[in-house]
Length: 494
Image (cartoon, rainbow, N blue to C red; front, side):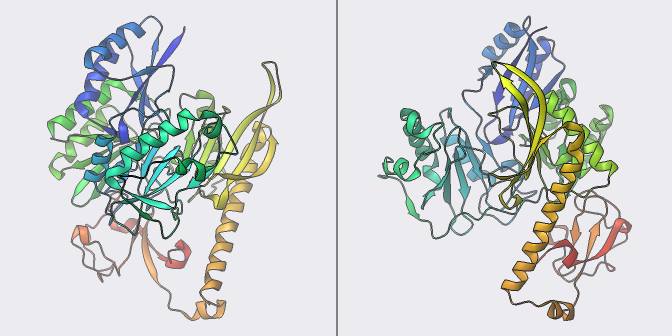
């Protein structure tokens, strides 16, 4: 039976529960039972050839924009889903994100990313026009161009004011589309020439004193019902990427009933609900229990990215996760990507890329996999080098394990180099006072006695022993007894 895929964009990953509920009602009329969320924070709905007209007619009545079996207008993605829960002490607030998204009153035909620099939850450079908030100048943004269908990167030497992001985005898109031979699928694309064509009049700019500093990758545990700032956030991940429509409809209704005006979808194909009140926590737990939504998947499963609508990639992911678990392999700090299509893009420190030894006149035989490592293993950088070529599927787990060892060797050498730059000698380091932290065994959250937890009314300097016996982990709510004492140097927290 033939299927069509309908794509609905949620700019910035921000979803109105009322709008989503209406879309899901329309999907129910077209006899759909499940939906997916995509890498670019959009909704993907698969429907049969017999029901596509029913569904699109309903969407037209709702005034909802959509595409069928195409992606001419890729979604604008943002780091907003992580704001406040994973990103703190930043000038880039909810209001700033929404002001920018409101001002982009057109549908870009090239990829646009809008991200905070102090995070690695949302990919910063998977767009063609990548806006990255300055960490030094409030309301100013770095701009990095990645020319369409290439890995050519160009960082602009100017910072752009928040209110002009929409204007500059539109002009740059128009220039790129008007000169496709120069800027699309051209490995010789010249960023300097592109910006020479940009009319700077009426745009507030200032010179960028420094280039963008890409955050080291550190994926937060993004599922479960977790406490923050005297409220809760709920993250939901599905192993098969399928979200039951009946469940989502009840989730939307619960958002509306508890006066939550939005939910978010992430670049990890998951959803996040922020701002849940303590008094409503039991209602959310009841919803999860009603639909038997499993939580607390292993971290080595959550840090994989697979192409959208790719059952082959999902099967390979599940195979590799099983092998990593059987070998008890540590994967903290690593993001794996699986790529089976030539022009697709995933966010990865280590990329598993499929190809065929024989690929001639549409005949593809003998599939093998190449393993590539990103520059400095930072998934926000481009994939830098080939680690291993032409691996049959059964050899992949061992080769992946070896690439992981290379990552930890790189981290160890980087730490040693950093110590040398700061004049530390091994014998000096041994003489320094050892600093201990307390780490949750379940989600790896750290309690630092020096910092305390001001947001939970725990003053700086409060020792772990002095915490109340009913203290629990602010992320996963694990009991106090679930924490272990650990040397700060082991965690590489400088």
